[in-house]
Amino acid sequence: MEKRIFITQAMIDQYGVLNGDNDIIHYDIDYARQRGYKDTLAHGPMVMGYAAELAARMYGDAWHRRGEIEVKFVAPTYPNEELVVSIDDGGNVVAKAGETINVVGSARLR
Amino acid sequence: MTRPSDIKPREDEQRGTTYEDYVIGDTLPPLRFTVTPEIMREYASVVDGSAGGYDVGTRKAALPSVLQVYFMAVLYSKYPPQQGGVMGANQFRFFEPIWADESIDIIGTGRIEKKFVKRNKRYVSFSADFKDTKGRLIAQALNVSHFPE
Image (cartoon, rainbow over all chains, first blue to last red):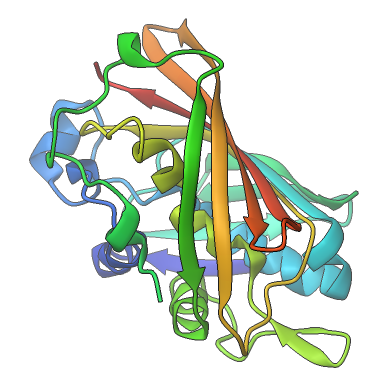
């Protein structure tokens, strides 16, 4: 299964409103560049959330009692990029923006 | 209803915790909050999910990862955040459905698991348990983040 999401700054901001995050790395591009990033960063849990949502659909009922998801953020997710989030039949999770792998991990049942 | 911003100390509100401040093995005190159907729907909307919930037997459940938006508050309630924290890894395990049509009172507790330096980045790892008021385990989580100071 996979989903494609075009990440926007508005989506990053909306997630920040929900989770109460005031870390400027998510909306201050000058600060983000000062830290060595090319743009502001999407929230890690937001990206993980896309994968967790896919897993909920993939595993159905069992996800809610036996589901576990584990991800590593290996590259930043930036606004104005299309993110492709996928889970294969073995439960391997990947999120890519173009040729760059941003997230790797797994979503499986215990 | 508890919005995460109601219980989560925000960056720049107070002195941010530095790497040296974290104490391995330190416990994080109980953090109580209420997850409402409104928050569940709002969460679904920001992760491309279904606002109507997900079938679990004859009922609808929210995405259990909704607890993610409260997760860092468990850490920050004792160790206030500094600007520029970046997540390195995250893990969630789910044990009981969170029903989409009713509010649930949750108590989050946690522990500082470890801290380490890798490639000149300062990492801190903490874990959290989320239980309902009857003591049933709803979810467990583990996070690794790195901080600039």
